[in-house]
Image (tube, rainbow, N blue to C red; front, side):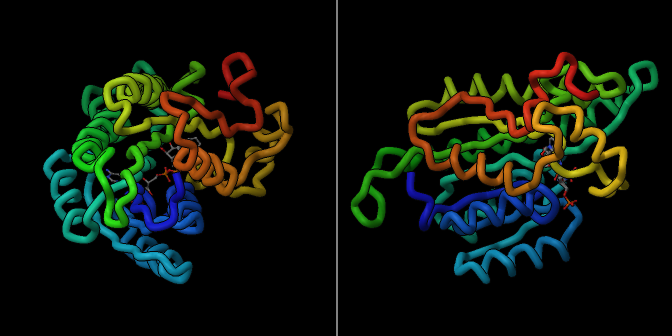
Length: 261
Ligand SMILES: NC(=O)c1ccc[n+]([C@@H]2O[C@H](COP(=O)([O-])OP(=O)(O)OC[C@H]3O[C@@H](n4cnc5c(N)ncnc54)[C@H](OP(=O)(O)O)[C@@H]3O)[C@@H](O)[C@H]2O)c1
């Protein structure tokens, strides 16, 4: 699918990896609806970067743990853009919750953001995508299938100690990708990216010896770059015959038993 003139909605798209996904899609030709949680200033800046690339950009805030706010987010989207081609579910938490100390509230908060929100976003996005799929577009061409991209995590593939709630939510996202790819074909393609050591978690710097050491443990012996993930997202958005796929962008980390965790 040619991305020129398509419309993408990226959750958590204001900063860090979400910003790289936003800008990667804008460089490939998409107009962008940038969702953010609390980073209003970063969202404004990222929208400016999208416009500097010659694309349209709008921003809107929503707490994705609240289904009513997800509905309001789509109302804002509908008011900004007529149609949706690509949804990227990137917003997430990364909480260490030691097994014995994890409360019901901890568990529910992680699942609500990392798993329920991508499901609700996908459901609402797919309704819009299916309404136009296969119909003639404004230029008479047939509308390409919609695209949903989920962002999982190695913790959802390997068993990391201290991350049970997070790992289960991200493993659920891999399965959600498979089930929605089956449910929504041929109108919507759904794929998942599993990034490895790309950006250090909040509080760690890219040049911290501990972070560099994490990179040295993977087969390619280095940490990655947000652009590597954006490149995979553009590939998955463009390639019309890929659905239900998992792409590891991790320097080969998934080949290690138990990952690096
Ligand atoms: N960074 C990596 O190397 C790496 C590795 C593996 C997997 N991943 C996955 O890739 C994705 C992006 O990674 P990242 O490091 O950029 O993530 P991040 O910085 O931890 O979080 C992404 C965004 O999620 C948003 N968010 C958090 N709570 C929210 C809520 N309740 N409602 C709405 N939005 C909320 C935040 O938006 P605001 O800032 O606007 O509040 C934040 O900017 C995530 O799904 C992550 O699990 C990343």
